Image 1 (tube, one colour):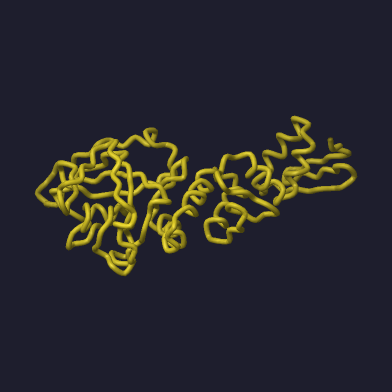
Image 2 (cartoon, rainbow, N blue to C red):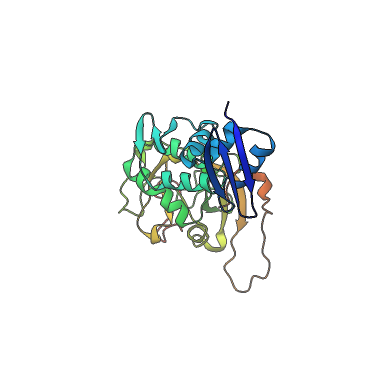
Length: 276
């Protein structure tokens, strides 16, 4: 149990002497408010750890359920192997900024289970660039265009009503990112999905496990992905193209329906060669 020997607080900082060692924290520190609470609660051990950023991050990380991830000396490990990538940097930024970082950790945990190196390297930057949100469980949300009767554009055999889970063998999904129109379930950004199908289409929101993503094709300005599995979670809107149409029909989207997410075209030749 550590001892608080002395303390002074100004309008812009806290200085505490703990076990004879002076420590200072300015008010722009993301842990400043938590440090004030620790002082009020006389939780000196926690107060001391808040002055050490790496120790604070480690403690906060250990308090979460983040699957196969661990943090040691400010390095994230996945099953004992250090992870040095853009997502890891983002996680530290979230922790330091006081943002909810557990969903991003769960996303990374699932992504690193993906056997496709290309998907592991490219998926997160794709999602961030296209404003596609990550849910509390680490899955992410994307848009998909389907026919008005909820079947796929290409074959008409895959039904996409809310609650449906569609999947196919992973080895049946094209992993060649240079091949834009090929086998696999496609989903993508709002701009991409809305541009496909015209007045005979509707948009749905699908939930995808990052472990199931196979490739991010380079056509269509890299706005879509191919996956082996997805779940339909929301009927989003009916798309009207004709300038004579004055009515707009849309299912009201209530963010509370999916508030565990961080809210956030198909090819002209055909959305998918497998399903649409």
